[in-house]
Image (cartoon, rainbow, N blue to C red; front, side, top):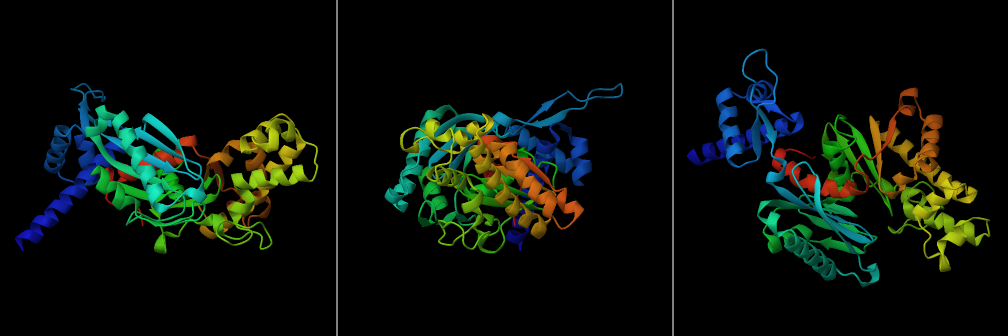
Length: 408
């Protein structure tokens, strides 16, 4: 009985600690009295937990508050540089690493190429991650003792509880025990998540979704993935499949997808779809400046070049992006009708194409939405930019520190 009571007390204390930490984080600066008021905890409980946080240097005090003639209240703020996190964003073509503080500010970063998928095995992939993180730790040796965890954002379907990549079709990998291997190697807590879900969590904490309870985040790059925030929490669904919007079918006679089906959303509206659409126009002999600018064998033909040519007035480049935006709009419309979110956040490389893709997408929504309210659903670009999934990877670890309940 005593063991049960002790365990219950420790759990409650841990929950209260996370609750207080999170209120300090979201408030920016707050006095102890306001923490007690917002949490419903007794002032002595708040004082005791805050004393522990001060001793651990997780929070610091200041007298920057305002007063009505008396002493300024002592405010508590997060000591953002007291701890660090390593974030890893595993893409199809590259692996990116970042060291961030508790505010997700990037302190150091590193980029490595991903081997061609035909040469990639589970063992080689894990060796790549191990070597990359080990080297990164060595390069940041002065912060090493303050690192509290590693967050990994990965392409594909991820079992976030076990930290296993179940199915990564573009990388041709299955059942990769990322969490187990990294925790054994580095003796640090490891969180693993799908990259689009990590992006959604990052947007919720640090980006466009800070003040939004329900929204969907689309990561539109080589493929398309989705992350769903419901009631302020990341939603996983059954077997971690929620958000796989890229593999919903838009055109049954459309291009072949990496999953084996035809006409998936990502075959029509992703960065890869932009490039393939450009190749088709060029093979048809369409007059475009893309040919001259893409180099021999169209070596440099990519979304960035197509966007550049569109900005310079190339009609074919503009048509490519408009068609892609129209298909993106069809997918967004499905999301809006099915989930009715307050907002959809667009991240990934395609989001950089601005009006050439987003305006046609919005036109589809405004002209075909079932209701006037649905047509007004906000479509915004990620505030985290290129670092979206990387910041999201770090947020996976931060969510463990600041909140025991962060996903469903």
